[in-house]
Image 1 (cartoon, rainbow over the protein chains, first blue to last red):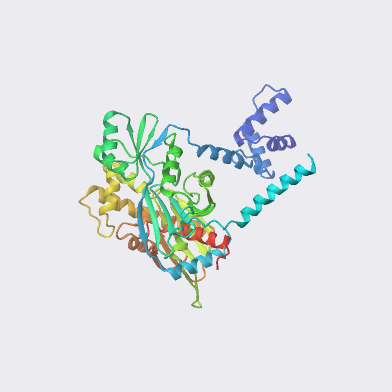
Image 2 (image 1 turned 90 degrees about the vertical axis):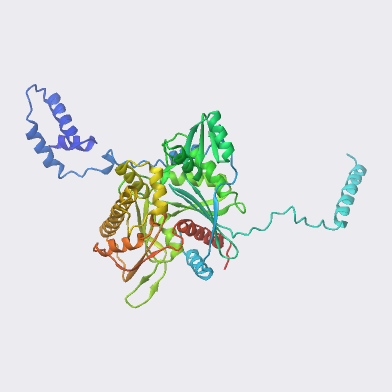
Length: 117
Length: 382
């Protein structure tokens, strides 16, 4: 059982793959050629798994690596004009004016000034 | 160098300095100075899937908006297309072997030609990858609509959607790209949550059991083309926010699919003729639009209930819901929304549902207010 626990901790893959791998390893280690009863082994593994704390970092779907630098570099390349784009305009957009309650706006700006981001 | 030579040099230098001091100060050439702007410092920008809106505030208090339909229509470069664009004075970008007609002209030409579809450089609230040079094209457009900062590092707030709960859309990259872009234009940019912008401009309130009215508290919703953004806030603090990926574009697409009518024609009908209280079922486009609008409203109410119940959010008292955005503009929208809330066993007590005074500009107005407050805070304006 300790062997199975070690395998479960070390192999960050799906449960089915864990079982396959353990069966292969067991065959190699015991040099058995006969068929191993997968169901019996799977039940043993399922029982063992209930008591094993598996770290989240072992899960492939959760990547704890901070890739913000990559994103920043990629973002910089996005704002580069690579030439060959020629606009025929210099002042796009229609203009519209809307009235406001000046006092209400001033009050809201005062409230917002007191807030952190 | 001898002392005499040094004395001569010193004497020359001192006489030059004296002559400079004796001279009367040169009058300041007012014409050369940058004229005082009619705008207050601090600009808000809403880069939506459907429209780009830039808002500034005049010294008189009024808001001035510049808006541009965020749409492109590709045309192959030919003698015929060149003549059409030049003679019609349509705005376009020449890129590689194509012309991209921009803004309202894109929709007009698409409708006139009657084939193909308009392209959105943004999709589901973030930069689209549907055309390879989308970001290059949209930055040329934004730069033209926004213009230059009033001064170096003028505060700019750009509205950013919250991450969607029903789709795998991450806004982080979108946020970084826009931030970098505005910095290159000379602004001091910061993101601001889109739904919170609606709250800043409409100031929803929670009325406590003791009768006290707490400002900037309640639920704010921005209903855009790509996303619907929702925020729960209390005293101006965002307690939780999320977005729903099926919004105005979804309504258009589904109505187009259901009827076989071109999407650009559906958009035109929606903006001109749709009434949700008395839907015109003799018109296939309007009928489909009203059916999908009802589904959309029910979906938004469903997700608000689900999200805030799961997060165990609580509001003590009666809260206002404030709504804005282009998708909320058809006649009868608020009535339909009120009905959906009252039939939904909503987790909060709602005092009223308020439509923003200018639903189309509300996000950009709210972003402008936040930028104005940044400026005043930075310059210690009281």
